[in-house]
Amino acid sequence: MVRQDLNVAPAPEVVNAAPAPAGVGAAPAAVGSGPSRRALVLGGLTGLAGLGAIGGIGGCAALWPGAGAPPTLPREWRAAWVATVAQIDWPSRNDLGTEAQRAEMVAMLDQAAAVGLNALILQVRPAADALYASALEPWSEVLTGVQGRAPDPLWDPLAEWVDGAHRRGLELHAWFNPYRARHPSARSEPAPGHVMRSDPAIVRRYGDLAWMDPAEPRAARRMLDVVLDVVRRYDIDGVHIDDYFYPYPQPDGQGGERPFPDDEPWARYQAGGGPLSRADWRRAHVDALIETLHREIHAAKPWLRFGISPFGLPRPDRRPAGIEGFSPFDKLYADVERWVDAGWLDILVPQLYWPRAQAAQAFEPLLDTWLRGNPHGRHVWPGLFTSRIGAARNAYTPDEVLGQIDVVRSRPAAGGHAHFSMVALLHDREGVAARLQRGPYARPALPPATPWLPEPAPPPPAWHWQPLGEGLGRLELQAAPGSVLRQVAWWALGDEGWSLQLLPMLPGQAVQAWVEPRMRRVQVLGIGRTGLASAPLSGWQRLGGWRFDG
Image (cartoon, rainbow, N blue to C red; front, side, top):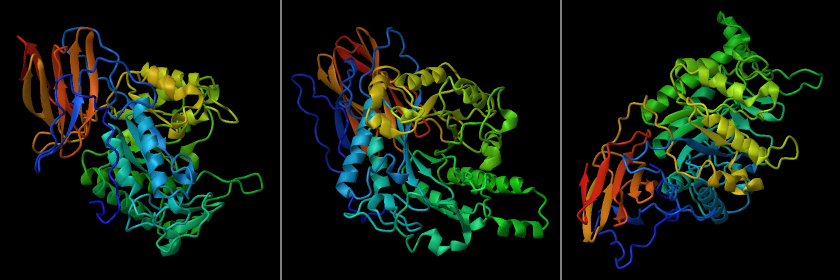
């Protein structure tokens, strides 16, 4: 459970609730201890609102023509990273105070939903610290300017990000940095509970960084304990780690690279007769962390997805012809291909942060290489460097980002992408957010399902129909007893074709949907935590009335 003593204000209601049809009173309020209710007109036959005006349900989509069965549910992961280290995305400053930080959070969530995203990846552990209420690590200085200082008034940012995302139909993946103990942007002293003070023997100084040594078992155990604490207490949709395993090499001032200072554990390993080379020994520690994270996350919550976003170049012996550059296999000791081959992850988000025309790191052959090397059919959704739009050097144009999305969509084995980072969409750099909303994101989409996780498809939503005469009525939907729904997909057939709305389904809540005479048929599907859809609940007009089956 999230701590109950925090001063956490509820996120604002953001459902795009239209008024009831003419002549019909407002939906009744919740009665007694039953589920709370939200009234929605679900005709779904109007166009998208302007940028920033859409509520949290994905809006109304362009029509799918045809009067037969509804189309297949559209699926595409449309994500953005929200980086908190060095105030990259949120909060914009570390001296804003609680209400200003909350207002920035709400604005970012609103924009994510308005643009058409369906997932956010929030950095919650930038450097062995926490953007949530934790007994294991201190509050992050990105919130208050001083590590260990709690926000005032007290709030739990992660709890409100999760709630706000789910109210808007967005997934929220919690992003952890496994080993970094101090970032160069840090200004305050380490707090008493920080690893640099509580367990300094496992921390190494490396240039302008402090780094927990992957060879020290307590470093890995600390990461596991922190992740599992969040998994158990928060209703997140996934756990995410990025490309920082061993640190990126820093120069030694003599034309070479500064060695990572792990002589002591390496000497212990050799003294014990260890057979591995130093490079393989380092990779073995990272491999063990990845395997254990995958196993323990799923043991705690089998429906959670575990994702990794590595540096985008494969290991040298698996690269396509003409691709060259930095090797995370040799420099970060990240054997990503082994993790994929072993099935130790659910989502792979290779950071393909180069333009399509850059031959030595060309986007298309790199994407194809990662897609081919996926024997277990895990999700492969590339990361796009959207924040390069407007950069002082090597800037992208919006055409580059939209062109990369077109490339991804042309590969059936790919099913989505992620933008680094949300700030570029928040500020609509060079119109990229508006172009995404009007173009590739004009129709709503669910994240792809993850069928290899053990949670089965949910049963159809429980429903109650209240006819109001002349083809009008109210349909109340909620999760069936014992099941959990993240969303409800609502198809409505009108004179011009099918339209789709994706409706957030929050725990303990019901959705009240107006069914109107202009609709000829409706179909409702519940969407579970792994994205699997229920069997349909179908309704159709007959002789001025509605019948439902499901």
